[in-house]
Length: 77
Image (cartoon, rainbow, N blue to C red; front, top):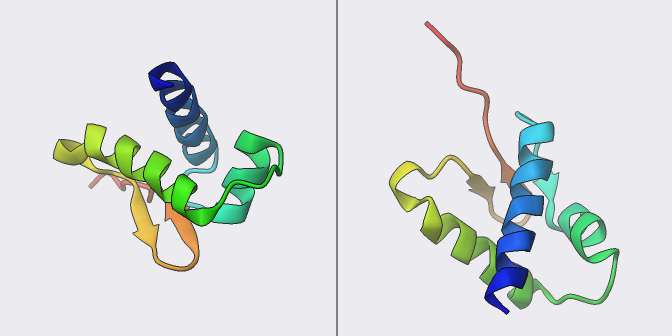
């Protein structure tokens, strides 16, 4: 089961990085990672929380409650 979460975390990060600066809906994650299977919101939140817990010291994934998740672009000064 742990390996499954690691693979899901990688897929979530891949989607966010490929779409840097774009808000990704929970439904899109469900479709791209679980092939639109019936995964409930609670299960998705568990996967996302475990990922965010792993990066908590440098949490760059921003949640937009009710909409989705984004990695906002960091602008160099």
